[in-house]
Length: 497
Image 1 (cartoon, rainbow, N blue to C red):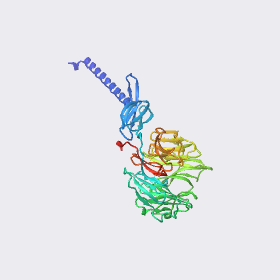
Image 2: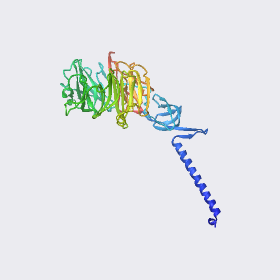
Image 3: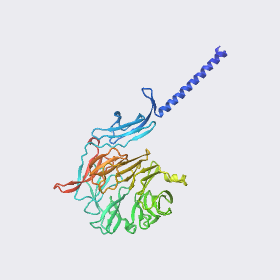
Image 4: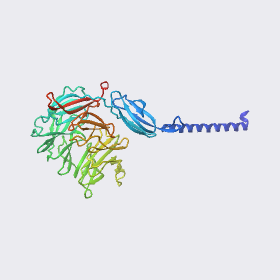
């Protein structure tokens, strides 16, 4: 019997061992191959090893054609595995201008190009209304639905359009009740300070020859509008009022003469001191204040600090005599802060500064990015808070906190006066008026698109779906006399509206 033969038993065991070893080698090799495939490695037809990267593409409108180095890769929205290298990414759709940019694909990397906005080859503005003079205020609610235009000849009188309606044929009228504005005169002006996130209340500043005051407009029920300066007994007239946490009944009050920042509400109009020695500030929520302070600092310096409820954190210092610019926002659970000074050629970006300073209280705070730009005079987060703008006129620097990339460039064309700065159109594009034409450009300085005529005193605006653009531009009436018209321009071809 074979199983009693020691020689045969030994050979069988050897064969089993060899089989197990061979199987283990195959499993190991298979695992290694799977790992390499997972990290994008592969073999081309020449037997050479390459590594893939993954890109996600999308566009507005959808179903546009994707080309990488002139090779078709289907339609947006999709994801594409391609070997590492440099590519020209082009997105085309019939009836629209081409969008393109050079991309660098790294092995095992994941990149998102989900923001391309395609502009029709031909734009056709439609005049909605005409005005004998330029409106003093044109503003839009945070949800981009309600569009308010001040009647130029009547202080406190507005026309309101509902941008959810494709045809803007039936606007409503609303007026701040008599007695709200103190001694209004034809030379007075109104200025939009801030909308409440309820999309109903608008904080306005009434500017007069003798100073100013603050008024809360209730666009839904104008009779409920109020004079906040009177309600809060805010003196002197140089004091400023802003909304706390964008709530219409919660306020910050700043006295530039005493450099004291207060808080108050409609339910409790008594001013409560928050900070002293404040030179400039930016608030977020109801408890956080990013501010420039002249207190408890070395001679000839100013500290940039973050107040969270009752705890102060020192971020950095600047020389005295500067103008200080700062902004803060939250994105994907992380806090980002940007600070700048006119006497510095840099804007500093910090991620989670409060958490970092709590963990390392004795270490200087290190920025995650430094945007280099001479004489910074404006900083602002994009609409979706994923990007940051630092600017001095046509000199632009942006930081993409999602991809951790920064860009520096000069805008094509100059900003028409009285524009001091460009602004964010959305989360990925800047918008400005140059040479009487509305321009939009991607955050990284490419894909400039010239749209329609616009006036630099009034920022062009879009509806919630970005299917329509609204501008006010100079025109001629039927008697060829100069006036201004409100235009609605489709930003889609008819089939995509």
